[in-house]
Amino acid sequence: MRKYYIDWIRNLGILFLIVFHTARRSTRQFARDRTMRLLVPFVFGCLVIVPPQSYYALRFHEGYAGNYLEFLWSYFTDFAGWDPLTGLSPAHLWFIVFLFVMTVATLPLMRWAIAREYSPTWMRDQRLLFAAFAGLLVLSFLPAPGGKSLFVSAGYFVLGFFIATDDAIIDGVERTRKAYLLIALVGTAAIVIEELTVGRQAGLVATMWHYPVYWAVLLAILGFGKRYLDRPSKVIAYLTQASFPIYIVHQTYLVVIAYYVLQVSDHGVVPFVAIALTTLGLSIATYELNRRYNPVRALFGLRSARSAGERIPAG
Image (cartoon, rainbow, N blue to C red; front, side):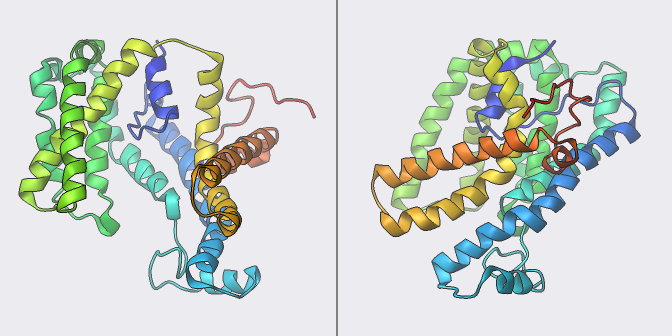
């Protein structure tokens, strides 16, 4: 049964990504699918989508005066670090690599659980489920290059997988949603106060109370999503296909548009709205254009129209 609330939450921008596509496919098929739908768009994005945003960011922040071809030469020959202002960088596409590594690395666990219809019954007890933040906290102390922890992301991924595959667990989350929301609101307010006074703190003590808040926020989102968004709609059907291509292109459009808009006005609501709406419009237009051509669909993580059961629009 399709879990529409998960589609809504994902498409609203919540990075609680849960993969349902493992059931009853072979490991080889799954790995091939992940490669085509994640690594191919990642490589294409790094080579084509990201360079323009790096070029305009360099012009905006550093006053770079060279043309785009000159920039591309230095961009693709500078391997000093993955910094968009100095050389080759994945920019916002870093999470695609994380997602690929997480799905492939946890595939044996997911296949084992599906084959045996296993579910961690302890997660049905909401007190124990909430206590799972302790595992995430431990993972947060493992290496995190660039401040982005693959281990913590994988922890969220695995927890999400087990929550999504056991209706008893998600039903419990739905029933406890108000308690999770209360914890999330109080904890978020405390973090905001921390930010505004002493600044974001690191270390064991700060992490020990930050992670319960993060976990409560996600559980609250899942609980309220299950309660109010678990229904099909034409909007969600469209966004389920469009969200990943929009994610790939949106930041480049945003940076380029912002470069020109901020030269006219750099404060107030008007430039903010202009940048946001133009970025959204161009991102959707790019998706609409590219989904009409099968050879291009793969570059944006889309299956062929026939495999996806889509009818390619005429014109």
